[in-house]
Picture 1 (tube, rainbow, N blue to C red):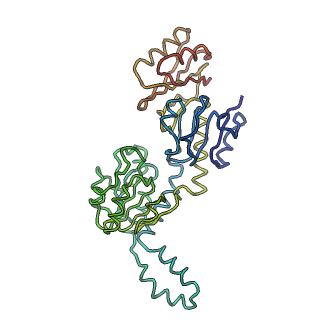
Picture 2: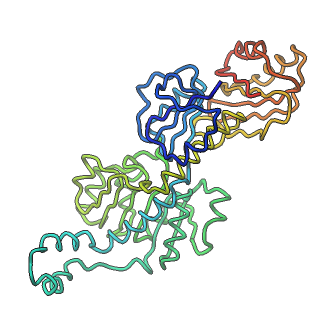
Length: 388
């Protein structure tokens, strides 16, 4: 029986081509074992009890009800880093747009396109669009994930003096970052030092509105502020005041809304960060690989609502995966079920994340429906799946 996949949005063919003939693309989401999605909202959708996974071909997952999915044992994946280069290039472009009035100059040319002496007129007009160079300026990067590190390295190569701050900086990202980047411990050090500040942090309850009056007051006068993460990281009422006063010289944001579209001294792009063919292809391929690894081996990588859990490829007779609540005594109850059936557990991987946990059992014989039923009967178990 084939594994049924539904695409809520168009997904790049180079990604879908990675599914073999054991997978089938279906039109009805209610039939799906797994869903691929980009921007479609899933918050009001009725989620089938048979749905196993959702893969977001992109980084942001605010269009997916994560808690609701976790409660039903639906593992939600995203594709961190797949669109990082596309966003990095737009951030570099944004710095240039902000510090040199390129947009104003282009608009002047359009307005004077019928002037026979436009070349002569341009020589007089161009002084109104003069700006400054980014080389030698200080750039502060808040958030050194996949995108932040690429921005840091690119800016460093462009001759900028780069500062970075990330309390959760991973070893891999640290190793990928140029030695010339100055790491600081607090955002305040970036606020006080930097001519440009770019933000690359996820939207969480703890980060929502983090850029407010207090933060803007600490920044250098005339700072250029770049936001290619989420608009709601910024208190836009406080930002308007900072823009009006000149505290923030320019705001460049990739998220148009009724407020950002009307802010003074602001350049708004229509969510173009990952809008490159390369980014869409990379996201699609990563999302499909995550789904296949989960369906075929039970392993979880890049989930946003369940822990990373990798038992490799099963080398035993059977494998069972259990999504469950992260509460005490679960493992002892699981092992009791296998012991009762006389089945030896040859390998077990258990990981937790917040209120949820996930356990993979490699066993010495094929898993049976009886084992599944017994495991499902344990209080706190959300979903049990026979992988092999």
